[in-house]
Image 1 (cartoon, helix red, strand yellow):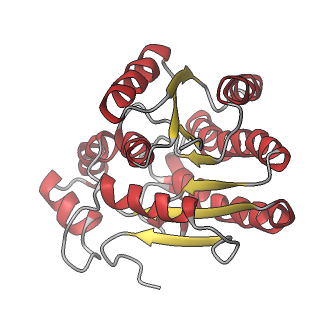
Image 2: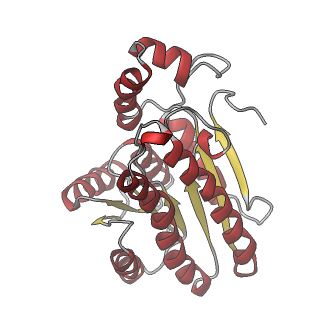
Image 3: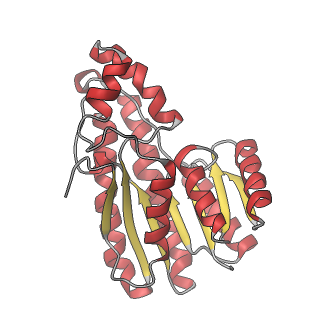
Length: 257
């Protein structure tokens, strides 16, 4: 297949799972992450496992020039970009009134500005090539709130608006945009939050899992990386504008709509 998918923050975790799903469907896959060695290693492993063309590249999504240069390199080496998955992200746990300005800015820079820089540069290329699909990895926190995550919640809510704006403006160029909102996925990022939450809330780590992370799911189960990747792939490969400007929460029933 001569289709190309870029996934930001894809050397590990959800991003890696998404990259593998596209590679399994014989997409050419671009792995971008902060560290060149991590991106290259992951890209090589995927190329060997799935027998597809890959590219590993360092990309700081908060750096506009680096993003523009990265997108230009992809289009030069792989001729086009069909799918972009805005996955790069981070989490900072803090009470709202104690949130440090530099931490708030750091988180918003990655989620909002990073998604803006990547999506804008990719959309320019997609318009030239007859269309494409831009996917945002939001969160259940794109539609609801939890304690001590104010910056993350603000940023993930904002991605809904950005996605809808792109869907609206991109339609005439066959550029679609959608958002996938994972619930609690057992990744390195989530596992790191558990002791932080326990410390801030003064409860046990077991209580964090049962009463905070999984309390409002229907079956008290974590969402899997594979669950998220499958929904991303579905949105990205849907053939028409019937599915654009949409969001889907993948959360074992948390925040039923």
